[in-house]
Image (tube, rainbow, N blue to C red; front, side, top):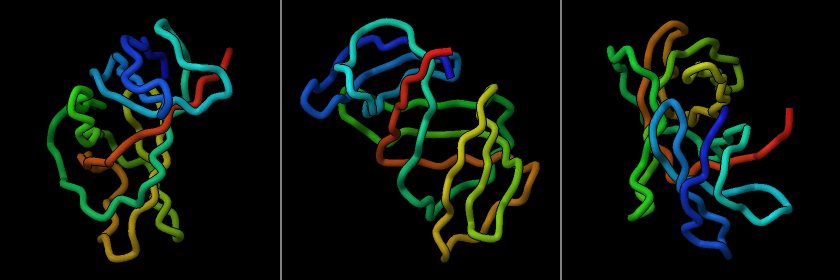
Amino acid sequence: MRIEVLEILDAERREVRFRSELGDAWGVWQADDVPSEGQFDVEIDINEEISTWLSDEGDTDRLDGDASHRQAVRVRGTVQTVDEDSVTSLRVGRDILLVEMANEAVPPQPGSTITFDTPEIHLYPYQL
């Protein structure tokens, strides 16, 4: 996913505020280098299990969260696959995110659009 880092929120924790075609959010930079403002290609990782989600009839994928208060990041996308081990692939914009559904969560159906909140996301920069 292509993002623009707009602000370094906490240099020690490597928290950044960013913008993408899916909205504005915040995340934790996962690289050896210190985060800086600018445009980057990143892989997004959600390292928390998803225990609650909502079916959503919205047609716009999104990734947004209030960076000023480090609120949860809201993700909306379309379920592509649900594996036996509860790993779910979710199309969010042009990208695929892999999320792990908690064992107690009822898995969503492929083709459905879901929305969920996650406490934070991790950003792994890479170069094309």
